[in-house]
Image (cartoon, rainbow, N blue to C red):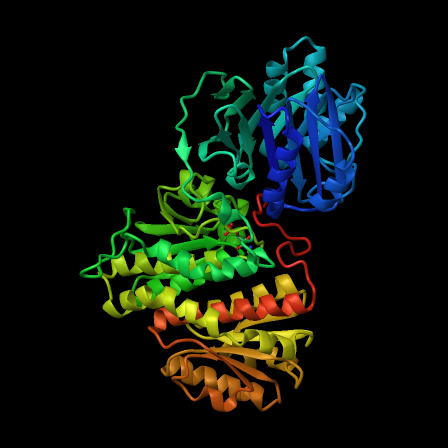
Length: 592
Ligand code: M6R
């Protein structure tokens, strides 16, 4: 977690560039923020709170410098205070460091440094790094060697960057945390993610674990752990900088909900033959069985994916990545699929590594080109949703499910009905966006205090996802259940004040059984909101109906999910919640 930015070569606007970059990285953490500029000395300004607090602290101050680094934090070690905000400095205030990740041996390093007379001013693990650099400098090391020597002492996961007084260079290194360089004609950047500098350049270089980078106004270099130069590929980012703005929407989340038709078209583009509807994907997999590993919303997409594989007779199971070590080992020829929007979620990366240790082939289903998951897995399937900034995942869920549907259809030799439904999907989502009455539903129930979401088959992960979306941005209690499970316990909580969202599409056995469960809550006077394509008689038992266009059962639940995204959004807006940055959360969770 946390966002890092570094910049050299924009001496007239270093500070603005850093703060702008931080505002683009704020989705990674927003407990506190800070910058350090090297202008002969080192000047650090940092504040608890969102970037706005930092902006206020900087107002009227002339903070300039040739080079600088910045950080936006999601707390791990120590509460979000000014002291714990990054950058952290050494005893002499001549070294400033920002860090993303966790330094596992920080306590022993801290004890050792304290013993040697270093004074610590924060509770963070990060603060050991500037003191280590200071120690190596005072031992006679040159700045680059001092930085390398300090990094060599730390264990754990890190993307770390440092500036030193009297130096016009930024030093950086990574291990298990993302770091990407941005190359402009006269300026160079480094960041946890491309949006931080995308406005200035589309040329990027992804650092690998164990690599070090040095940026100065004259250029950039990357070396390996042994100090040998590494030949890096310069990639070109294909999305526009405007894609990381709000484009007139009140929130990124709403914008991203509305971007779903485009995201879905992008996901399908070039992958479904015009004439015969055949699916072609650039992945080399043909599994006999599948294990999924994922977290949060991506886990719900994985549950959906497991259902899709099972429906074509391939055994499949979805595991919460953080619980994967206790799962049965993959069988021969079993594929392990990591579903992860960011490609950087520590729990998911760790489960994928465990799968590889167990001898399985791995596939990353991710949105992020060059991410750790994409690079470490044997194969990668990109979902092509475009940047998602809102902490609440929306368009990436839809695109993950569509990418998995494509994979299943390719293995299944292309089921015509599902392919046709995939082609209609973007238009159907657009119809929902144009006609949804989700706001009225939200207005009626937004302060009910507790909400249930139920569904069966592919509607089950959508019930889980509907509840997650609702709770994370509204702060109201919401739970998703397999509809059949209600009567085995949760029904005790249902009262006449508990809205129950029931996802019922089609008119098959699954729909009929869910309707049976809906009658159970209706009999307890609970308000029922049916999300339905109108093919069953669920409307008879519902107080409100959120309609979705009629389509193939495999894709209908994706449409229902869009309605639930809108309900969650409008309820959170009515409750005046900070929708894009819900408390205690961050977009990319790079700690286990
Ligand atoms: O980047 P990932 O897809 O691996 O992230 C996993 C979860 O942290 C994420 O899906 C989270 O649950 C959502 N942001 C919630 O909306």
